[in-house]
Length: 158
Image (cartoon, rainbow, N blue to C red; front, side, top):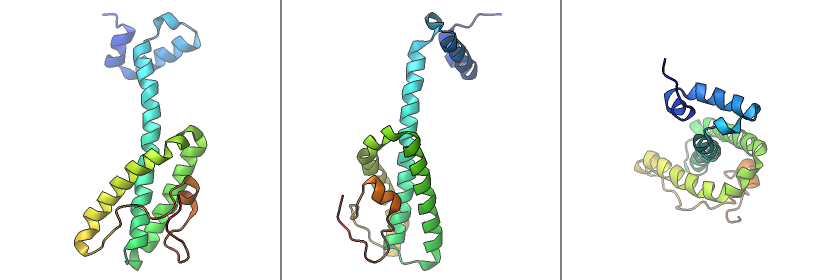
């Protein structure tokens, strides 16, 4: 049987690589760690957490745009349910990893662009128009709590 090195184990059997890496870390067997791949995996974890918030924010914005600008009352309940769900999940992510908050503005900018394009693709042919910029407060607290479609909600603030 051929001996598989730690580095090639990463490519050959990722699960076994993770198990052996954990054992090496717990036993402080640092000389047998595949540091290059370990560093890459830890960096990927951070990227995936940011991506998770960005994707949820995109979905939140899609449904906020629809709820604010599309007059289809039969769909309001579904859009509002999705808004509540995404807000709750974003809050959980931010509570679990508060350092994600420092990326909010960048995540918002990307999510807004993606959400706007999606809603435009789905509804502009039906005669609906949408602003090119988010016209409401975009800070975390506002995005997770304000029902922007209700009367009395003013556009503007950041």
